Amino acid sequence: MKTFRKSTVLVAAFLVVAALTLSACAPAAQPTVAPAPSVPAPTAMPQMAPTPQPTAMPTQAPNSMPAQAPTTGAGTKSTALRTALNNLLGEHVILAANATNAALGGRNDEFKAAADALDANSVALSKAIGSVYGTDAENAFLPLWRKHISFFVDYTQGVAANDKAKQDKAVNDLIGYTTDFGAFLNSANPNLPADTVASLVKDHVVGLKAVVDAQAAKDYAGAYTKQREAYQHMQTIADPLAGAIVKQFPDKFDGATDTKSGDLHTALNKLLQEHAYLAAAATNAALGGRNDEFKAAADALDGNSVDLSKAIGSVYGGDAEKAFLPLWRKHIGFFVDYTTGVATQDKAKQDKAVNDLIGYTRDFGAFLNSANPNLPADAVSDLVQKHVVGLKSVVDAQGTKDYAAAYTSLRDAAGHMQMIADPLSDAIVKQFPDKFR
Image (tube, rainbow, N blue to C red; front, side, top):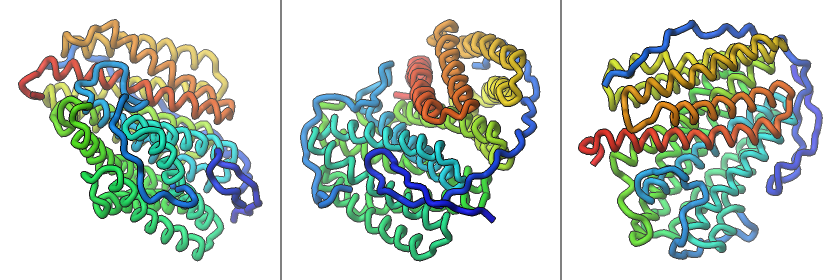
């Protein structure tokens, strides 16, 4: 039975000072991390709110794109807006789940780092809103968004302390919040019905609650399944929000959001961002000796790989899907090797894994170029190499328990995935214009 001690935790500037009862457990033994089977690389691919709470968000015509808009080509400005909102809202779910998982596991330093990263995501989301509706809206949105996060802190505290009354109050607060948030967005954009927004945010709340409950029960397979569902659900909020903004300001955003090209951009961005976060979750659990969590995270990561291969197959066919999956899994196997080297302080193993990963980037560049001449092999290789280096930085920081650096590097690595997803999407649309007209 865990013994809990009171600790005062300041979560950025917005969370209330809380007495968290967190355990200080001795580190478990490192898991035996077996590398994925070697797969020969194919040479070609077949063709929460303020006090007092605002009742309305000021409206203002946009004069710039959201802060998270891609720097590479991403189709239209409407598609860029849709992508930015999906990436930010999806990241919100993952960082919230990481924070609650660390809190329930008694990992104080990791919890604070995850919570700080979560708040940075909230700030970025408020800036995206502000880029459309102005500074007053940005300043009103941020404390309102932070408010529901604070309610989740309350719920997690209640779960950790087996305090049913605290849990029930937090749930009631969250349900009430959904109504306030729906009214808030509707005040800014009449294309967003308050009841519809409230219903979607309620589903978000229920989904994250299910993640926390599974984490508390140490049902890590259930927790990662629920996390992936909650991550995907955020698209049902991001897509209507982007569509409503474009409808409200048609002169500022060219094109519609609900296009086949937009669907492709969104799908690849979401899958590749999720890949980075799930890979980091698996390495973090492995380095922390949390065997059951490592297996669940690794299984979720492989589920993401399968989904990514299906996205490729939806464009290039079943043979391409079957060829892509083992090649993509191969670089994950090399990261397993690297993580094992870090865990055992085996420098030779680390160096070999890095060399294997660098070599992989060239194979992957040639692989994509064989399918789509709009994707230069060297350019793809360079982008994937940056992905490899970014994730390596995350693993290195996790290995030294520098969680602040780990989450900073992780957000950078996840953000960089858009530099792969956007050019890949653009190249596919260019290759098959009739398919994505």
